[in-house]
Amino acid sequence: MFRTIAVLVAAAAASRAAGADVGGPALDYALNCQGCHRADGAATPGSVPALAGSVGKFLRVPGGREYLARVPGVAQAPLDDAATAAVLNWVLERFGRDDTPADFAPYTAAELGRLRRSPLTDVERVRRELIEAIARSR
Image (cartoon, rainbow, N blue to C red):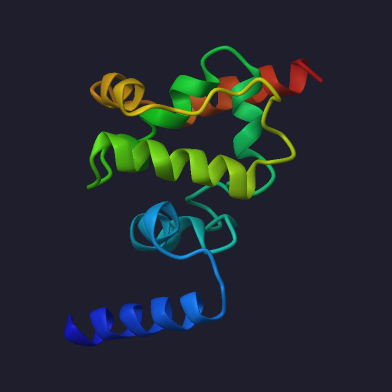
């Protein structure tokens, strides 16, 4: 445990010295999301979908905005609503910049608080339906 903490602190210090985006939502992503979604937003084959190149597309279809806040990893994140909103907005900027609609309004703590109270129970079905809607909207 202490070794893990020491490695994280050293990595954060080195990244900060190099001018990298560290702390706040970037650090929260690294600590809470990156284990499955990878540092570059890539997929974990067979279990976790990629964020890079796809996350912003969900905002283009009805229900997509709510989906992003209600998936288990977001809805059950060990962060408060404000920190979770900040991470989700950071993810969209970092991995979905090219696909996020120009009129996107950032998530707020109040919105996340409301949506996180009803996490998705059939994530795969909802995701499949949204992906079909995205494909039809092209």
